[in-house]
Length: 382
Image (cartoon, rainbow, N blue to C red; front, side, top):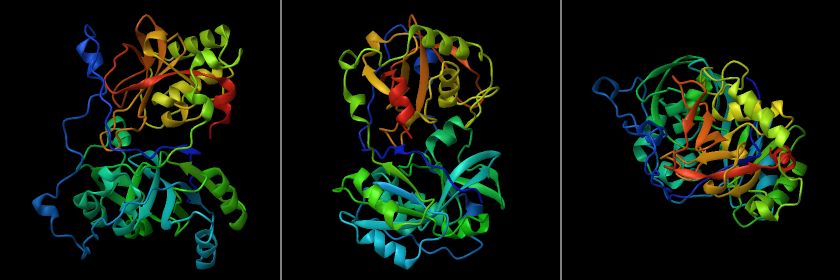
């Protein structure tokens, strides 16, 4: 099973949904483009599905939330000795084991966790953690996928999708809080799928410096261990206004023109979830590919691209700036979509499954903000 590669910057969110009303005069289609779908976020059990083939134990109630700060991946299973070493480090409050790998789901490569629903739920955002029905669906054999994979990737609730060991039912749209993980199954399903055993560890250490703790964990674990910082650790320069950045921090006019021309050269190409080009793209894949043509090394996913430069007001947006939205109702503060500002109220984007790379009017519903990319900062984001 391939070793999962995770982003160094991932987002665990609060429960406040930021809603910004669309500007008057925008086209209805543009304003509704990222609107929440009408379907619910949970697949109810149909009558013929309510008697499982195996006995499913009730999921334990949620008692206390643990804020995850580090997501650790090893090439071999964690041993009791390794767990004790991590648990003794200063600042560590709680640990949770999981199985992690990249699997093929409906023809897409999806980073997946196999978990104990009763205990892992406490490490997810409150909206996900508090849903007993969601975790009971996972315990019964369903797969819970991220809202982005479900909505943009075309995986609708109740749908039976192709997996490595047969069909899996999409039982819920949920968020783990780890930006690189888009699917969650039970440990039993994980074993059937062939996921490696106990190769992932979630660390809760809310009072410890994440970078320092990360370095200490790497010292006590075997070589090849990967650790993603979550919840989130953002580069300090991202918080500064553009005017306070040193001269030469941002893309040159020539780089901007190259990136814009590159993006425009892909107009009409299909959206495919997880695609990075050159013939198909998802939203962040288009950004990464277009900026690469200008010699700018961009991280792969939206929440990483969010911290690649200075935030600027939408009224001051310039061609080549990136525009971001928060449209995930399961993870309201998560950065879920990105587009490239073209100018004059227009942007170029790869919207969702069934659509193509195209120009659209900028809309402000669920707008997160605008970022002016710094190539030096972008190259440091992992």
